[in-house]
Length: 197
Image (cartoon, rainbow, N blue to C red; front, side, top):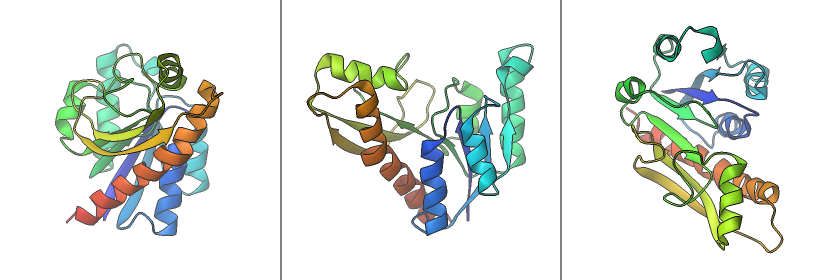
């Protein structure tokens, strides 16, 4: 059984796709052990509670400095003995010590076809605004392993999505979520779970 922890900052639509995948059997051999947020008001925590998944809030605001916050976050992760950490819209920079602790055991979903529109400053609607400004005809989403750099780890899966005439950042974001993010994130977790001893 693959023991999974999901880190979130906001609404948790990707978390919902994972929950639905586990409950429907599309994600095999997987146990959602905990959902952790840096934001106590994140609706993602409510989604987790509705499905009986333990939740934790570890906020940088509650600690004197980043090092103490990172230590507390690591302690929570360690307590659940996770096989896989999933960053699903988690808007906190992951410290190097955490990346080293979970080599090839931490994945992220990014709303573009990496290497396009990724790295520092590219998150949420900003990604889709940049894609529209550039005039790309195809965008999409990428699931990748997390390494020290931002959005630099090996790519596990990508899904292309067409940019349509008249798209706004909001309509494009919705289509990328529906046609790419909610499809490939569960698919990657399922694949990793099937490979898990």
